[in-house]
Length: 321
Ligand code: ADP
Ligand code: MG
Image 1 (cartoon, rainbow, N blue to C red):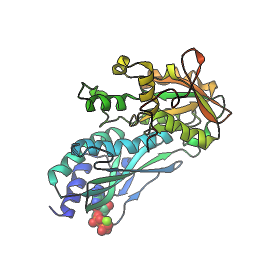
Image 2 (cartoon, rainbow, N blue to C red):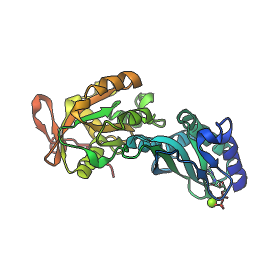
Image 3 (cartoon, protein in one colour):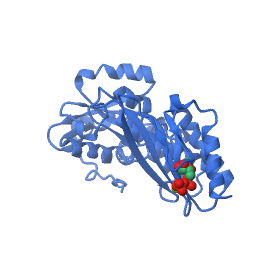
Image 4 (cartoon, protein in one colour):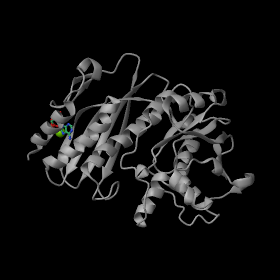
């Protein structure tokens, strides 16, 4: 198959059944030298990009469907962390061979998530080379409403969505040849787009947890020039993690990556919003600590005792690179 045939296949598969230009904001999509997009009045454009390389970001035997899903999911998670509405995407595909079946499954995986978020693929690039997928996701947000890492304030509640450490624990179980919790083998992480939208206008700072809770929390603290008190016993775990002892559990929760949950800081006056969001979005939201004026992250263990994850024998503890 030639490059232009693959592009045509992607174009047909992604445009089938899509709403008209008025709804999608696509004046000109795949097929010209560049796309022309309509940013609605009263919004700013939000742009994010993430690359997935075979062997580094996904195992070599990952299905094309899962790669298609994940390359969009990780980008939508970044848009969610900004409080943005996803709108469009540009896709750069580097393929070892021009396989029509591979591209069809990849596009099916991409579509399965793109459709539920009303996102249109509007362009890209197709080249031959080692398997690598790079996606640029574009969204929109009201001016001044984008959730930034630098906006945490002392006294804010520290809140996390879903459970943390589940993906790393499930992967470890799988690698040890044990039964893993399929739900958390996050080849198909569900980006928290609706939560991000709900937070815009309320939360101060927000980040999506892709590198591990502690590593990503530190990004927020550094950008905001403040610190945090983190209560280990309040960290949300998956059901499967109940079998772990506390230290192993905290290890996964603090350092495990690939969860794609949102970590945000909420002014105390909005505490009651948490109950509304839990109900409206059917989502787990856990208050796990608070933002403090002095820099650094203090982990608090049982009985209110300070707990240093590195000194306290976290054998597997490592900062993701
Ligand atoms: P050019 O040579 O002008 O860059 P290309 O042949 O690379 O054009 O691409 C032709 C059209 O197909 C462009 O609109 C481009 O955005 C689109 N396109 C190419 N590859 C992809 C892809 N993997 N996914 C979506 N659109 C693509
Ligand atoms: Mg090109």
